[in-house]
Each structure stands twice: as structure tokens, then as C-alpha cells.
Length: 578
Ligand SMILES: Nc1ncnc2c1ncn2[C@@H]1O[C@H](COP(=O)(O)OP(=O)(O)O)[C@@H](O)[C@H]1O
Ligand SMILES: [Mg+2]
Image (cartoon, rainbow, N blue to C red; front, side):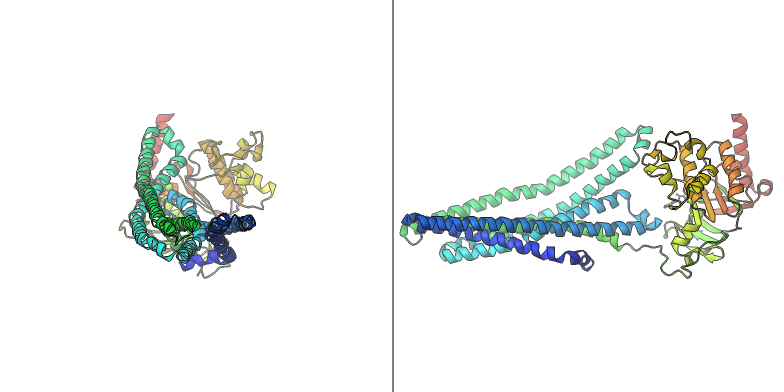
């Protein structure tokens, strides 16, 4: 809980003023019935009109003060709660931004979205309610109790019978409701995850005609949420009529006993109306407290889920790097006996004992079946994941000794699942370098063979891309992603299967332009087609995380069996295709 103080501190005045202003409302609520009783007992009984007007005026003033207090209290409570939530949300977001790839693997995107939105809103609502009720409910309880006893101690004893019953009832409701709310929140999480997954993959779902299946999945999650919500609210719904019954029974009791006292002449008539109001206030305040407790138990589940994100140790940082100022200069890459596994408890390594060297300016090709560890291998260079054993050196320095910023600035990477963002093509390319000149932009675009198709668009580089770059073809998207990486002028360029959707002729042009514009950049190219890497200085052949061959195309063709297999299977296809 200590960590949340930070979100209260800057808004402490609002956190204090809010509940205090609610007190004004409570005081008003408690004295209004007394004024009313006076009007009946004194004013009406004695036909004293000026007294009635005076009391009436006092009631109007009190009502206005109450309104001001109520509005002010609600305003400051809302301000405190909203500010708290907004700061918290921004911290959780920052934390998620700092997450390493392996941290992100732990949470589903849907769950993170729920935590950032619904869970924080839940907490915000409870803070808002608590600030308004925190002093109001106990204040009203104590005030009304005090007034009731002052007015007629004997009659007030009735309340003492009712209160224990009510408290017992409330305790019972909370005990039954809490686990149900907890369960409901989990079902909500499941529903949100389903929606999230469906929306992000809607194109795949449609193309596989899995709409009906997804609808079924959604219907199931929705039904479960409905059931669990009904289960939870049943308790709350039941709560209300029982309390009302109790309240009416009490009123009846008061009227019964009070009526007797009035007939005996020991109690003025006006006191009875005031008294009933106080009793209602007492019971109401207890119900309010019950609501706050009920909501808090719901928010507690949310707080727990938020804390889980905030408490996650970011397992990849550059805090203790040896050379925070060092930048990547020449772009040599060396793997020394690198072993890596995604799940640390697994014995199967995704990469085992991989060693190779790439000199500055060389082109390195990587070939291997799907799942052989190609993507994993290159992700070690910009430290998207950290090796388990061995080391990765860039310019002879362990990548862990660079600051992440400098290391990643030096490495341009086009991911296998590359994405573009909504915005213009130019804005997307400028991601690589926010200060790039028009000439540099054009040069990178030309080298990636993006310029030819961009210039056919009416708006050229100012063409708006949809989210994820939906309005360009797969091959065009890949070329834009390459251009974006080139604009960074990286010392090491990694292309992870980035030309798979580009036709062979265009791909050859891209390779050609790399030869002239990226002479000094180390190029690491993962490809499916052997033709894409045939001219590389060195080709690495991966098989189930092991390096089974390394050398030039000619050398590998002579002595590396797995390479020969891939080569001949691809040649066969080409022959049969032509
Ligand atoms: N984020 C991840 N979490 C767990 N396992 C992963 C992850 N990414 C890849 N893998 C596993 O690691 C192996 C190698 O994957 P990858 O490097 O993507 O292969 P390639 O790029 O050669 O197709 C595969 O068995 C894959 O299932
Ligand atoms: Mg891959």
C-alpha cells in the first residue's frame, strides 16, 4: 500500500477537503429534522407565524449550505480520485513500456489492457465513493444517534435492537458477495482477452472463416460473465428489500411506542416526525457503509492485479552497463558459445552453443527451417532477449555493457512480424530518424525499392496509412519497413525474412543497392530462399538451434548436407514451376 501514497500526496488537499465538505452536508441533514420538529412543536402549536418564518428561513439557508457542501465535496472527491487514477495509469503504462520481450511474454495483451483500463477505473470509483462516504456515513450515524438520544433516550433504545441485526446482515452480505465479485472480475478479464484477440486478429479469423467459432467463444465468455455478475448482484439485490423491511419495521415500532408517549403527553408531536427521520438516517448510513465495504472488496481484486504489473521485475536493463557512453562504431558481431531458452526450466535449448563472427561490412545469410531459431538468434544482437550462456559481442564489447539506447541505435532491425503505424508514410519512415532530411529519406526509400511504388500514389509520401499499414500490400509494407530501418543508418542491419513477400527481381535490386549504399554496414539477412543469401560472404545454416554449417554458398554446397537438401528442394520447385 505504501507505493500508492505517491499518487495521493500531490492531491492531498483534495483528498482532505472533499470529505470535510461532505461533513457540512451531514450536519445539515442532522439538524434539518430538528428545525422541522420546532416548527410543528412551537410554531404550529402556538400559531406563531414569525417563528415559523424564522425557522423556515434557517432551513433554506441550511439547505443552500448543504448544497454547496455537497457540490464541493463531490467535486474534490472526484478530482482526487481521477488524478490518482490518471497518475497511476501513466505509471503502469510506463512500466509496461519498459517491459522486456520476456516480461511481455508473461502477460497477455488483453489482460494488460484490462488492467490499464477497467481495473484502474474500478479503483478510481472506489476512491471517489470512499471520499464522499468516509466521513459522511459515520458522521451521519453518530449525529443522528446523538440527536435521537438527546430527543428521546427511551425511544432511541429501539435502534439498539435493530443495529445489531443490521450489522449482522451486512457482514453476511459482504462475506457472500466478495468471492462472487472476485470471480466476476476474472470473468471480465477473460471476456476482454477474447475481444482483444478477436479484434487484433479479425483479418485472420475472416480469412479462415472462423467467425462462427469466435462468436461461440465470445458467447461463452459473455454468458459466464453474465452468470457471475448475476450471482454477485443477487446478493446485493436481496440486500435492499431486506433492509427496507427492517427500516419499515423500525419506523412502525417507533410510531407505535412514540404514539403511546404522545397520548400520555410525554412527547411533543413534532419530535416523532424528526425522530423517524433520524432512525432512517441511522439505517441509511449503515447501508452506505455496507456499500463502501462491498465496493472496496471489489476494488481490492483490481489493486492486486495492478500491483502485479508494477511489481514485475524488468529483467533486461542497462543500469549496470560498463560503458554507458559507448556507441556501435564498426559493427563487428561475434557470438561465443551462445545458448538460450525461452522457458528457463526447460531443458531443450532454442539455441545451443552457437559461435560465429561477422566482420564489419560483411553480409551474413542465415538459412534454416521454421522454428530452427533464426529469429531467436538475431534477437540476441540488439538484446531483445539476453543469452543464458556464452556471450554476444559487438565491436568486441559484450552487448550487456552498452546502454540499450546506444546499442539499439546502432542496430537496425526489420522484424519478421513488421508493423507500420497509422499516420503518413513519411511519419512512419521518420521513426528511423526523426531529424532525417528529405534527401536522406528519399535515399533510404530508393535503396529499399519503396520509392517506385510510393511515387505512384497521388499523395506520395504524405499518403495516410491505416493502422498496421493495411492499405499497402505485404511486399510494399516490407519495403517500407526496410526503408525505415535504413534511415537509421545502422552499423548493423538485420533483416528477418523481410523480403519474403517481395518478388525476386525487386529483391535482387534491393540487394544490389545494399552493395553500394551499405558498404560498411554489417548485414545479417535471414531468408527462406537460398537465392536471397547466395552471394553472402558467409551463410549460417541452423537446425534445431544448432549451427550445422557455416561458409560460402559454394563451400556449403560441397560439404554441408542440410544445406544441400534445402538447395535442391528449392531448385526442384523452381524447375517444376518454370
Ligand atoms: N516468445 C517466445 N516464447 C517461447 N518460445 C518461443 C518464442 N519465440 C519463439 N519460440 C520458440 O523458439 C523456437 C525458435 O523460434 P524462432 O527463433 O522464431 O524460429 P525461426 O525464426 O527459425 O522460425 C521455436 O520452437 C519457437 O516455438
Ligand atoms: Mg523467424
